[in-house]
Length: 414
View 1: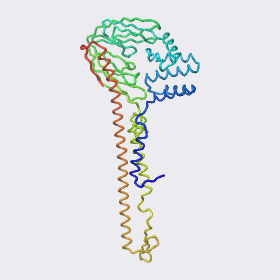
View 2: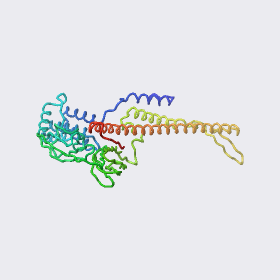
View 3: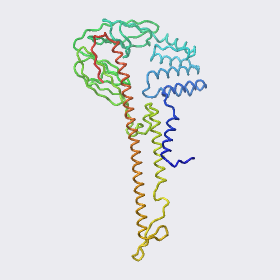
View 4: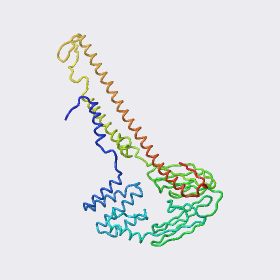
């Protein structure tokens, strides 16, 4: 092992090497799991692939798209294991999430595509929705689908909640059963209203409990009709509860979106460990930099503490009193009082310089840690802002396509 005399050079070299050896980007956990599953399938390790997918499915907070991918690949795993009943069950779960899914022949075997199409014929129907008046925004199970009159070619066969919203009219709601392989037609008549406002509450993640004026109204997303101001309280297990006061206005539609912050363990925050917070939010370069910076600092600090004791290797300095007379020693050699005073002053200066440098190095470490905390704070803030902006754009798009252009008055409350 080559020992570098200049520890600062060693620290900078270590940071440089680690920073550029690691890849500049990190793959999502979802992508890595699916990639691993495909490798296991190619090697015939079906039970390991099944176990990996089931463990991922149990994880809290995974997206609907990821659930769809997991169920799809579980179905493929069961097909390889000749468990056709389980394959069909998993494909049915896929269709519950995305009844319009079409498998590409470039990526899936023909027999897999045929099974999916067979399941689709037995579990998916069509839905035609007509409202009076027309041009109403249509929501299927609280998800925006389009403007009436509306024809949906692929809807999962089950009891389906239909919501129609239009300016100046009460909310229209119907619950009907969509029959597989058939077209179910629904007609809805909306009543004119002149005094109430409409509030739509959406959250990320969804299915949070919503209380309006301390009365439980259901889970998000939901629609509410009322007057004046209302207190909206949103709760979900594992997330910080949020409360907002929102003013409803006559004949206006207001959408409230709330991004819920996950509760963290108060005893240990991974974000406070240098580099880990950055890695967690996908900022790999930041994570590598601060991990390398901290590692290099710690190596330098402990190396300095061990090898730079100013009194290390110096002869022992002492004095002895015999019969009221003082004798000064440097190891076993007798020296004069003047030489003793000079040597003592020299050593005190060495200790003083050592302690000053030690304090400076300690403050540098504190500065590095504070810089890491600031970087992590802004990353978390940026990540939260990005997620809220994504949802806001989605909401804005839904509104711009959901109502009569130029007629509706919209307000956003965040």
